[in-house]
Image (tube, rainbow, N blue to C red):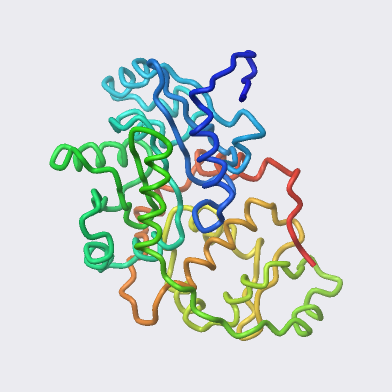
Length: 329
């Protein structure tokens, strides 16, 4: 039975914590501290704290309790509850305003591979069929995203699945079991086989790393970024979703990894576990992007909104846990 710092035992949280741990342990759904989950219980919104890893849900106290009425009153007054409660997820407004009891937001790589396409909604109509879903155009996280989802619900109030352009996936329902079942169905419908990539030239890369600040990642899949031409062309086109921009934008990319064309990838010896997990997620998305797919890159205006103190704080929180050693050679 899960105990919180107060010593209170909350059995009602157990199903959500178990779902959170499962989702957080699946790198195709969650990378590092991305995504968030919540449940509304007796007027309290229990929501994942910013920067915490969902994979730790059964080990650590990753949820924080917020007074739901207070959060909604803050929103009515035009405030941002995430600013009032800095430990809370940036998506607190979305979790509070959605009427569902349980809400799960994930950065599913298969979903993102569709959500970055200009024609994504067309493909999703075919793949998701009669599921209770809606497309949400890209808007910044926080209040703008929450209000966009409220507007979507006003026209179709029985929506339980939201595919967010250039962002990710939200699945919601009455309980954790229902959400898990629906999440499984959505991910099955959206699955894309990753494109095979040529093997890395490990001997050449090892020579490059000799007596340098670079190392080889243990994850062989990362080398697709250097050996697969479609992935290289795609990443050279711009930034596709917020986490890519926050972790691998122009100010961060060259200090964290280097693409060695035709041979593979080397990463900084100082790369954090969170940054390595984010890079793996990026490669998984790129390996599901088809050649000549019409992609929607984030605009300069959208990228500008992702910069600043809040973005830096998010990176710091995500990378703060050093107990996970990055897997390098």
